Length: 408
Length: 135
Image (cartoon, rainbow over all chains, first blue to last red; front, top):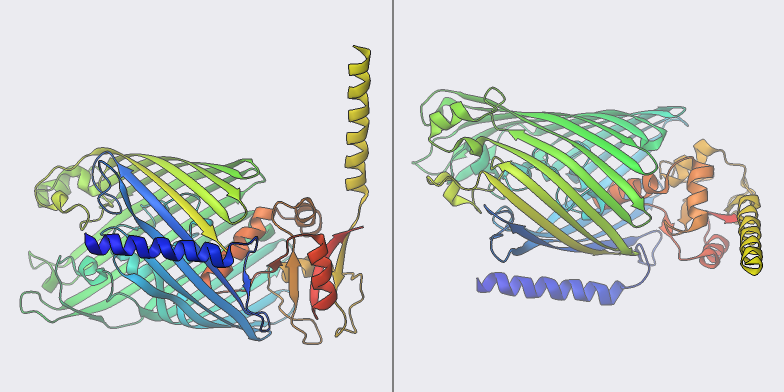
């Protein structure tokens, strides 16, 4: 408890310091050498739930355990060679306790082939290109609401860790014909699945001492866009095939395969934006990792539809319906409940969200979302141990999230 | 009653004059050509080339000088006009593309200046600079 208070104070000082240092009307800090610049952001959230816990102990008085602070530096060494790195401090209750991390540190070399086509390569710790929001998902300035739709962008589950960034390389290409542009990106990299509880999530063992090894992660994203994003269609896929090497006699070693295809569509009009994404997580575990000794295969389903309305120059309203089903063949959770003895609502979550966002001054924003949720399918086991220990939890609950952010 | 009507009439006229003035002003793209012999002060870059520059897909001029693009704040009337009339996109499309590259380490967005005076200074004194003005 004392540790949390100290961290709270520390980050408040950091935010205050940032505001004092760079508290000007600037979008970036010129470092005075070439085009080298620094940018940063500091966001503090507040979470309140009427049942269950989200990002900390969020019932009763709510939780302030939601904080995202980042600083990045970037510049060109040659006109086509960009170097960029970002440090991130993030805390999200029991779902993220890693605090400081290197978010990305990469070299990007871009080679225009002609006026229509460009190819490029990126090396280092790179952000995984996945869906519409994954690349910048920890920066509220790029999110439509305080939190992303949890069905697709799991923030409370440890699968998140392997999704954020990875160490390796990415090649990309773009070809444009008039107002039409086609993009493709392909990553091969070492996933960061030895941090933040990812191995526990993947193996299905609450306490899995050991190491994830094996084939590198593949991520691909290809898409079409019209008029610089007025309309866009994307298809992304994550292909993770890992071996778990146990370091404890209590848990066996084994292999885990995860395939996560995702389709995305977005229409951007002057005042309105409409977005939808649909995905499935196909998870396979070898016999050695399952309690009944039979190979495990499961497919979950995630989708959301969302509209944003920019009704005044500094204001945006958000309306979203988001759904997650832990087993696509058992959307009601009935069979899964019978098999596991856990409540049915542990196997899905349906979330209706209303949000408001106000950029009240240049580089400052405050956003607030209200969610009405049926089901507990994407909740963090760390923040909600009772859900897995015979408690029913709350099948129907409300979630209110508020976030304040400053950037330079 | 009459004076109110008269007042109203004057306001309308003034408003029309002002909007006409704003519409009549032409957006001019300016490039610092101190090191670029192949670019004139008032460049004839087309929409496709300007999009490549302002979405940062083109990072240097044909003679190799790095491009330094400058823009006005998102809500500045001239920036809104530049986005819509010259680039053919909504200002939020630009900001969203710039935020994505800035927070994922994939590109370096144009520099936002505070006002037209700052823009003039930057274009005048930065080799390879590009910006826009109303004339």
